[in-house]
Image (cartoon, rainbow, N blue to C red; front, side, top):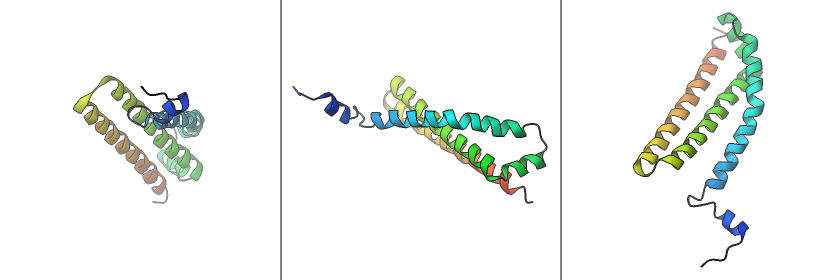
Length: 127
């Protein structure tokens, strides 16, 4: 029988030893999204419906490009962590590992695609 205080029990971080970090990371990304999503809607909504030339000129400026990039990265990272949490709750064994790997690959590929699209959009302004 072990006599652990509540603090010692929480320090163990659960069976996987990553639960507290995972939860904290989800909370931080959620707060970041509360700030980023309205900024993204404001910046993206401002240019919605304009011509291609105006959109490339707009995203060649740093502020809209940075807001869009941070929103893409943060939202997809938050999605990855949430999907991983759901997978850990409902699947077990090899299926769990395969699904976590698949979700991780898909979200990182989507992040890379989003950032590449922003970079190409910003760089095409000069061409």
